[in-house]
Length: 298
Image (tube, rainbow, N blue to C red; front, side):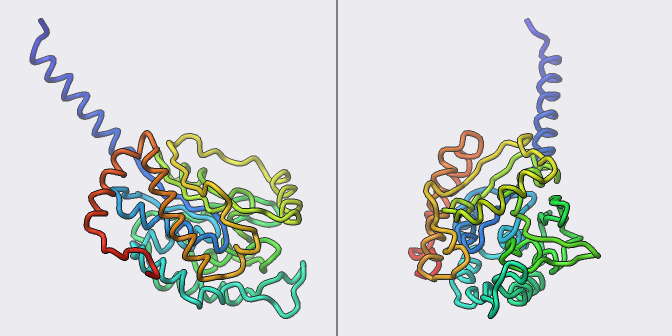
């Protein structure tokens, strides 16, 4: 027969180890690049916000950083969706009067104004990180919450070739999604052990974009890995549309992407072995209290 005192001490030890393990566990929400397909991320977050998911940090690249800055500040998901549906979002991508490869195809000021507005409106309460790419060395840089400025939010969303680069501290930076659509490595570097990623970069890329970006990825320094964390990736099962739609605002399409994000997140969570059961059950409870017309624009 086992000694009951020893058994209790073992159980207490295992219990302390389990508590310590839970305390060491950190969950990150990681948001990809994607231009106007970023609306899909907000739709997915609308579902995730109804579950018990409580990320310890938010990491984003490009449009994912803009969405992520607001989410890290506990912005209301429905309010974020409404912002995407508002026509003023269409002004962020304003075509230059004389577009070209050197000058870019879109004006830089509308994006800068929007980034400054987002930066001023929201102040993250969660740990936050964004990725930008330093030129000409093609190095991905992680910028943590307290170092982020409106310039960093502008730089990370400056679409390569299409928009001007951004100078910060004597260095030149461009879109954070240039080399990696979903910066899982940045979340791991920030201490994440579990990741819920929303990847909106499922689109029909034009040949000229593939020809331009692929060599850059080949020339870039070795990419860091995000494989050290358990990862759930929420992504569209089919492309959201052609690349042209990612840079041309259309309210009906934005609404469609918001709804697809919500639905895809619900399916992905239900099928996930390590997040699924807990999050899905909490979402069912939340759904019972949901207003009949919970989705934006209805």
